[in-house]
Structures are given as C-alpha cells and as structure tokens.
Length: 538
Image (cartoon, rainbow, N blue to C red; front, top):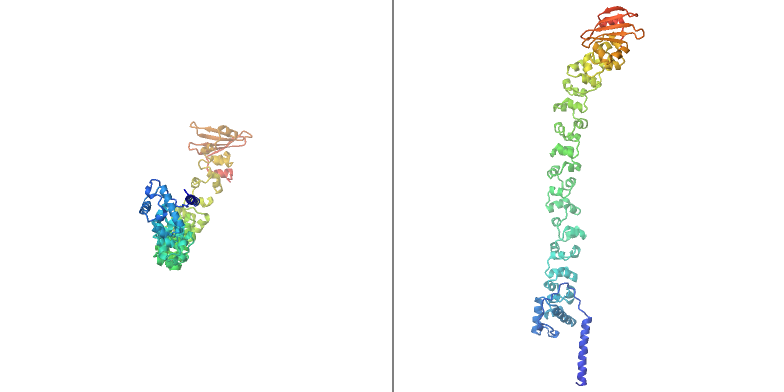
C-alpha cells in the first residue's frame, strides 16, 4: 500500500468515526408515549438501506410500507429514526418526507411527537390520519380552526380541554355544537351577553342549563315566557313570585291560583281580602296562609264555614266579632258559648231561653244581670249547686230550700249557722255531733234543747268521759240510751234528767232544785222549753 492509499484509507476511518460521534452526541428526542413492540424482526434486506437511495430502491419502499402497516421491532425503529433524522438534517420538508414515504403514521411509530411533527410542517390532518389524539394536537399548538379542518368534530374540542373563552371566536353554529353547558360558561365567566352574540336564544340557554330566574337578570319575564314557551306553572316552578308575575306579566289572581300558587304566595301581592274568596280559596287554605277569623269575615265567609275546628269560638267571638244571634241561628248551644266566656245576660239578650242556660256555672253578678228571682230560676231548673257555686248566701237560699237540702248540697254546720239556722234546728240533722263538738257546742246545750239520744252518741264520748263531764247515762237492754242525767260537778247534785224513748227522742224531762230534789217533770216541747228556760241560741 502506497502512501496515498494509506492516507485515503485513514481519512475514511476518521470520517466514519466523526459521523458516529455526531450521531451519539445529538440524540433524537422522542416524546410519543406509545409503547414499542419487539415482537417482530425486520427482514435482513429491510435493514441498513442507504439514505440516498430512498424511493430509488424498491426494497426501501417495500420496507417503509411494511413498517407503516406493522408494529416494528426496536432495531427497525432505531433504523427508521436514524434515516428520518438524516433527511431532516438535509432540510427536507414535510412534503418531501411524505414523498419519500415518511408519513406521519411512520414517524409516529418512530416516536416522533405531535409537536415535533408540527415543527416539521406536518398538518393537523396528517396527524389525525396517524391517529394522534386531539389532546396531543392541542398540546402541539394546532389552532381549533386547524383541528376542525382536519376533520375533528366540534364536540371533540371540548374533550380536548378547550375552555369556552378559547373557542368563543369560532363560527356561531360550530360554537353551539361544541356542547358546553351553563356550568361551563359560568365557570369560565362567559356572560349572557357574549352568548347572545354567539346566537344563543333564550330557548337555547335554558336547554344548556340556565334557569329562567338566572335569565331574568338580562331578559324580561315576558320575553322569557314567550321565547321559552313557558306557562305560569313553569314560571312558578322556575322560582318567579306571584308578585313578579302580576307586575311584569299582568297575570290575574285567578290565573295564579290555577297555576297552583297558594294563598300564602298571593298574600303579599296586594290582592284585596275579598279577592281571595272570589277566586275560590277555601277557608282552610286561607287559615294556613295566616289569615285570621276577622280577615275571613271581611272576605265574606259566613260563620258556618269558620266554626270549630277551623277557628275557635273565642276567635270568632272576640276577634271576628260575630254576633250571638248568628251563633244562635246556627244552633250553637248556649252552654258552649257560656264556656267560652259569654255571660248569661248576653245569652239572654241574644234570645236564648232561660231553660237553655240551666246547668251553667255563673257568678252572683251574672245571676243578677239575668233579672230573674231565685224562685224563678229554681222553677226553670237551676240547681242548688249552681246557686252555691255562684256565691248566693245561705240566708237567701233558705227561703226556697230546706235545711236538709242545704246540708245535702255540702253546707257544713258552721255555714248553716252563719246562714241563720239555730242550734235547735241544727241538732235535728243527722251526723252533726262531731261538727258541734268542734264548734264548742256542749252536751248541756243540746240536752236543754231536747236533742235525741242519737246526737249524744254522735259526740263520740265514752261512758267514762261523760261521767267526767258530769253526765250519768243509763241504757236499755238493747244498748240504746234510756236516760242521761246532768250532775253539778261542784255539789254532786242532780240538775236535770232527759229520758229517751225507743224512737231516740226526748220523751220526758226531770228538773231538780239546788239540793238535787225533783221539782218538776214534763213532756218537752221546744216552744215551752225556750220560754221556761229563757235560752238564747246564737
């Protein structure tokens, strides 16, 4: 080998080493995240084809076609990547690369990213054909218009993550096809005015999720009603108040009621009280709306529609001021009215008969206001218990009732005594001994009034106690008291003996002088006894 040949050989080696050094110092950046399959090995003739022979070599063209149709192995992938890189270094355009067979699909498999392919001049349509996802194209910097021209649908733009403000300048029809909802517009601060400019009608806005109430901040209720074809019921459900519908639509109360507006919702619309009745609200609905008995009376509802359980009698009487005559016409019993605070004097004035008032509880003043005497009231059926409850004094009642009746009605001995009854009268009553004893009435007083032997027993003293008190008692064989003798505890002399018959009454009296000698015997009569003994009873 001569010197020239050696130098030429050395230069070739140096050039080769320099090429390899440059290749390793400038690695090709792969951004595509698709997985690499090593399942298939390229045929030997498909490898190491010189770059300058692209498309000039049938084997090369076949290799690229095979590469685009199949999943390449790692060696093939690296080879195609190197070759494409060399072509790009030479300044070939995307069109020239495609002419040589390097489609976006092939370069995608060679792990070229969408962004890199865009930089090389590949169009969005090329990348879509290569099945790049729209998000990758958006990231690569393609404009929405380019994506649409590439064949993507308007709906795909939303899936790619475009916000409404990024697409607001698109054609109106296309923008509406994207599929944004009200929540998307509100989140991106797109105003109703902007949407209106994009061709959205009120009907469209409701379709995408705006409520009529939200639209009322820009449009009139009447415009919303007309364009959305809403009726009053739908407007009510949308949140519009009865007052707004009356004010802005001129809706009548009847129309609002037919649209299921309650009396509560109509209450503060300025509707007159009479208007509620005229449009057919029931008293029950009006009460639920908070109307009082007085309000319903002013509306024109009769008493018969308002009586309990709807409103209480007190409300109807004291608030609504229905007359007692109206209650009487409805057959409301006088007793029911009296129990609700109506005095019997007013009931009488309203036309209730005195017979209808019996069984009531009333005061003395009310009784006086009626204008009847006790005798008349008693004849009409008023009871002694009612008179006593009313506080009628016993001295007034004793003229129309017996002592026994007053006693049986619950009057005690003290009350009867205050009512004007004498001890002589009181000791004739049964079971009064203990009460007399509590009132400090003595046996001596009772014996001097010819009391019965029964009363002596009712005092409850034992034989020994009677003896200590100065009384000696004799009994019949049957246990009844035969006689009782009063002894002067200082002298021990007899003073008086009362004899009793089997009827328990005093039948004979012996009187003794200061020496204990019998001076008089007689059968008792109360009148004669009072005169002889000059007794003062209370």
